[in-house]
Image (cartoon, rainbow, N blue to C red; front, side, top):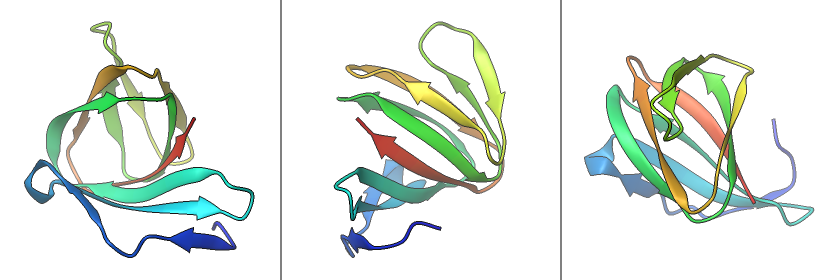
Length: 100
């Protein structure tokens, strides 16, 4: 659980609804989003570095080097800025994205 946040109640909807998230800012000024990805294979572009934290479900990720890695609940993976990554999920995948 993350306490004391300012949340944007308007959802971020990507890939025809296959990914939906809400952006928020913590009391210490950290920018984050929490969301869900429905079963799919999606390619995301990044502006800044991100840390993807798996809340529930599992995923396979290619961080741009053709090397697929698997992640499950409680695990995290780092995404470089100014790039892209591919994520595959077979069941609803819940995450928190930590920006910067």
